Image (cartoon, rainbow, N blue to C red; front, side, top):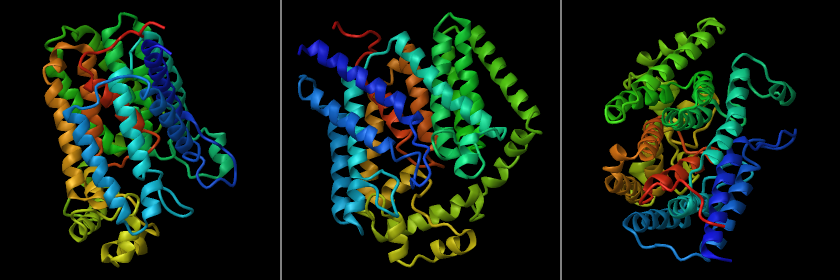
Length: 417
């Protein structure tokens, strides 16, 4: 098999993984988690297939970003061996714990990043098909927002807008990434009908009721105004903003001003002195920080935060469980969570990895349209991650985008077959 052909297959595999993971579910009664039970195997099999193909292609393996990423994975691996439950830390799931984000899953994320950086190509055909498939998820979420969902009624799930993702916060993260990337696609293309994609993804974001992602969108919108000064895209930008406002007013009107009422709670929830601020996140952050202080170097182990809180008899976790009836297994702040489960050295490595990529691409952000969109999408993910968690339904898309952003030059065509 020629190198070009192998590279093409890697590219196709990446598009398939990015397209399938958000939408695939198994809606059958009796399965513990209809949303993730299929996503884990798809990610694992897809990543193993990519590893097989990557061994057939000679690519640049030694780069500063790759080395720092390897160091980060090393710290995660070591923390897994010293975890309260090592097998859970490595695999990421057991009968009664885990969200399928153990060491193996993080390793697969790294594979996606590397494969995307070296082999992924952007074509209009692939982009449009990808957005069409993800539009199904977005439309599903909007229908759920208006209490139209036979799947929920059949399975007796709680009402809410979470589509095939399983949680409204995670849906919001996906919708945010899709909104920013599809907005960039619309601005760069001349076909007006592509505005459908940002509108429907914005609708899903509104349906999620997730304020952290709304704040991230506001920040990115303001930052984009600066870059637009280099692009001369004001007319299409104003059309886009107008279309999103129409979506907002329409959904707000037909929901009895539910969205508007939700926005009014943002100021109150930002009061960090209130332990129940951010839907209880302030209290979760404090108990997670307790674990960082207890395990500063290696952390409690991936997917072992819940066990660490139990073993250390954390008083905050006890109070939280008594009042809410729930246990805490994620810090609801991705950076804090990394420190809590993998240690401060792992967090430093992760941040350095991201920083190296942005330093390397800092000039291309202003010179290349694709890199501008990718930079905004990645920044939006990082901002919302301060209030959210990494999940297998969305994180692979982020790591693929990160790989695209890290490319030496944006690849927009497929290699010869």
